[in-house]
Image (cartoon, rainbow, N blue to C red; front, top):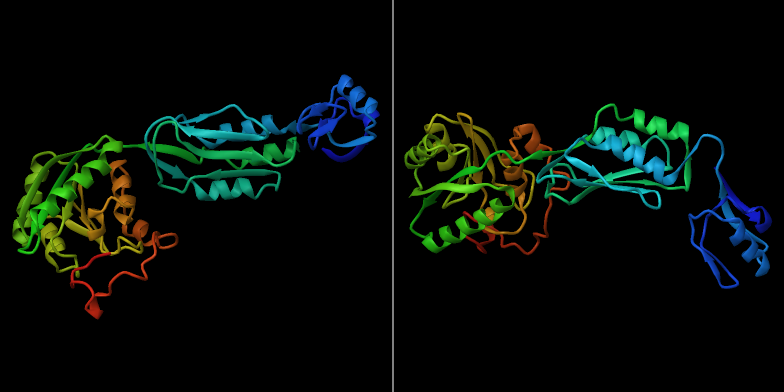
Length: 340
């Protein structure tokens, strides 16, 4: 592709690099100059214009963007018609976006003329939501560049993991200072979180803040067919020997990881009882605002395993809100079980 000023008399068949206005005639950038338009510009006294001349083997911006976009996703994504060198991809179903970061980085490293951008990995999406875009910067790109960009994608790097788990069991532990209205609000907030995924609260139990009582409740949820269990403690989890981890292990389950480099959400626990994942929810999960609980909940609902390695990798980007003004427990500004 050659870019530069050309005499109007030689512009027919070329592509305008910028919008051209002369003598009442207007031709927007990216359009082919017809012989008639060239004559009108010349009659209006325009001597030259900035245009693009395609060379053998060049691929137009729209065709190049579309070819690359078709390589990005599987059938869970829809590729829209390209325009002005851009081609967008949309989710065909609700679920969690999976991204091969290395593959996207590889495409963007091929040539400055070709770019691909996506939503963050593991972002919950709904059908019809835009999840990625390909943009070709110039008006055309060498065919060899398009081939190299496509070759960097032997497999589609994007797909939507559909939500698979539908039956959620909830256990709320009680202490004298915890109001029933707080538990009711917590259940309402969780139901609202689950609604976009198609999941629902199958059963809920309220038990004393005691390992044995919690173990019995979790075992009962497992027998009743819960596919995922969420435990809201009356007090935050302070140690692996605390009530919630002890209750999970007392039921015959295991604790995968306690703690999370996401704020709010630091005091989250992830474990399992047989095939049923168990989340020890942090206190911030009682709020409808986004927090680390959402990040783990959506992955599990999509049937994705969440390991300790997955949790510890969340630190970069894990600061979700300003926390300077949060009361400091050790300064006497909040109760000892205040949770992130």
